[in-house]
Length: 200
Image (cartoon, rainbow, N blue to C red; front, side, top):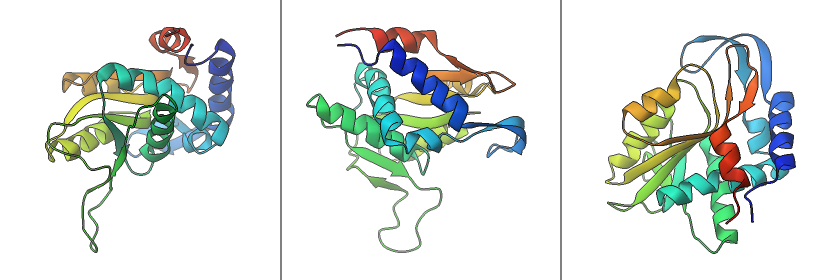
């Protein structure tokens, strides 16, 4: 059975265009100026679209052999949970973790929360959007400091600022469902389309 139908892919793309992309003058978390702002939470926190996103991003995670999934709080959390639930439907447990923006000043004070990450565990990083790749690399560094092995980075959307190149240059495989150009126009990645429509 295919991960998603052509109709689901097109509907998700349209939902992202309508709900997530706002045009104007913005400054991104990376510090870069932008002509549009992408708010992925408008789909990743919506039950219908989260379920589809989870199914679509599970495929590369399984191909990489990931045994846990997560990323930087807060954007990665709903995507990681969606992928984990999609895995559970296939009889696989894929625990979720997240990396805090800042170390807690109370309790266990752990930088990484959630899944029990043991040395040598293959983990995948997920993102709602990749711009320069800095957040992905920070999350990767946090779990590698615990002895885990980062097997890849998967994103719902990649902006045009070269984040995938930065991630690959650090030796991590990269997968994206969609990408945008400088004007904020959204496109479905052809590799993602092929993987989504593959039966198996």
